[in-house]
Image (cartoon, rainbow, N blue to C red; front, side):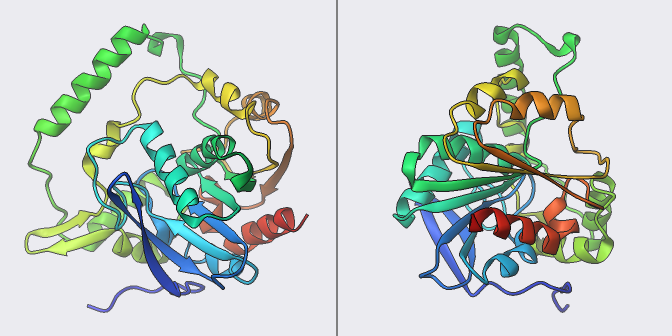
Length: 296
């Protein structure tokens, strides 16, 4: 069966790997290796090919490196999927590049490039956060004691690692339908391409490349901690959201305003006609905003 294609997708010019404490991380690369560098971080359950339309537009001026997070895409699976482990991976990638970079992240990746940027000091020039500003505040009934939340987290991890019967999907169409139910704004032609790159076919069916154990890897966390991180960011941030309500965002304006007020230097932009997956729904418009921000 021929691999699905999608209009505007450009095959990466290079593939490369990074090591983060012995864990192999896969990356796709577009553009002149000698050009200023952008590192792109995807959201949860996504992978580097999600940037395959956005990246070529950015590669007209930059060397663009889209990373598969640990346990996602073609990166190795890991024993831990904590937030700090993902941050450490980003730090190790930037340190391995050994030159100043700009960081671009979507959803979970947007939050993580923001955290990584203030830890990397002068190695990061600017940050672009695409709808990665965290979930809404938790309802009161969800605010358990920290000890109870730690215990619940460990119970989930224990049950997850005891499970070995991850059932395969019988066809690529089933994977597409599953993703469509989660992200109804994404069209089926794109999802066919995206799901084909994020899955493997074996004798008994289709499985996602992502490690199922990554589902409950973040551990105890509170949304109000976001402001503490944002206050540490010294470099400029471009904050991008879509105009359309979606299952995963954007946040209500009042909540987003409160969080972004902690950022010292922030530009805010809205992409009309996009939901949470701004860079997939409106890649050219998103690229134009990023290029304009990085030009200044």
